[in-house]
Image 1: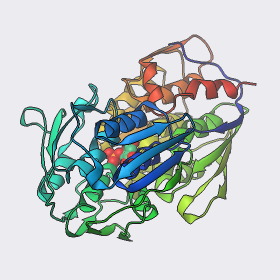
Image 2: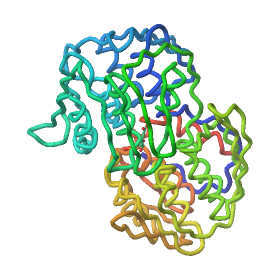
Image 3: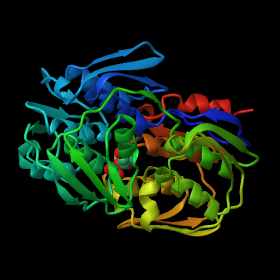
Length: 427
Ligand code: S3P
């Protein structure tokens, strides 16, 4: 599709879509808890709809009146064997987290997805779950989907030092640990998003977190809750950057979730010298707020270490931000980008180079030299929603000619109204 180009300014207010991570988890917790869970402000993007379909296949009654989702859970014992394979579409969160739930079930499930899912590494989840007593296997003895998982009703607790910083892996182990008999101890490589830990508590469970060490004693019974999903800072990120780099702009983003394990991009913008204000609302457990950004003079910085998991999904759009900053920005310690919906190190470097950026891929990140003028070109999202949205924000800066994006439909994975919101800021 032809993208929107040559914006002279962006002004207005946007309510960003609901948080993808929390939407997935709200359905999952609803399905394994006892009683009714109601979810308001659920993200109806393709990925989260895959999670709903997966649990329907596992026998859970889930109603959606267009406003509220109601999940009728009956505890871990309420799940039934699916009549056929479960298709997770493009959703890595669905396939990895559901494995932790299926690890304790008395039946076998086959999980598959699209061509991107077929390349996502799964040993990171399968190995610890197998250690706990499940039997997971990939296609033809590989670690890649389609996967089969045979659960065990006699799961053992695990003592696990995580080799990768991954909230998906941590969450899968926590779902299994909730069904195991005894105490599991998980030590994270770096602290990652902690929505699963938060929701275990919200659903009446018990978990102890001491910095990177997590202790959980199973088996536990959870109770259905009322969940209200906040806006997704990972979706807000595209407009945060747009407001900073398009001339004469001021954008207000409302109801953005501000869980501290997710707010690395705010720290980066401040460090680069961007004009950003954050007004917090909500209590400690449900931090949210309004973020306002305005066009800014930016400078390059180094981004690496413990901040990486706090902005892992925002790195493609941060790379674009860096093309508009004076000096060099170095992104390092981010090798996980290679195993996202696509290889995001290569995708960002290839596509932004096509538009005139000076950007080098490295083994664990990117080196970006600013400030560059972007020009027209033909680009692709590689079927990755966040690459597609980043390229549309880049296109806003292109003064002459067109920017044509292949595989633009991927954007509906997390932000179905993205182009509507781009138009909203046009005045
Ligand atoms: C997610 C965790 C992250 C993130 C993904 C969502 C989650 O993946 O990239 O978009 O909801 O737990 P990893 O756990 O692979 O880092």
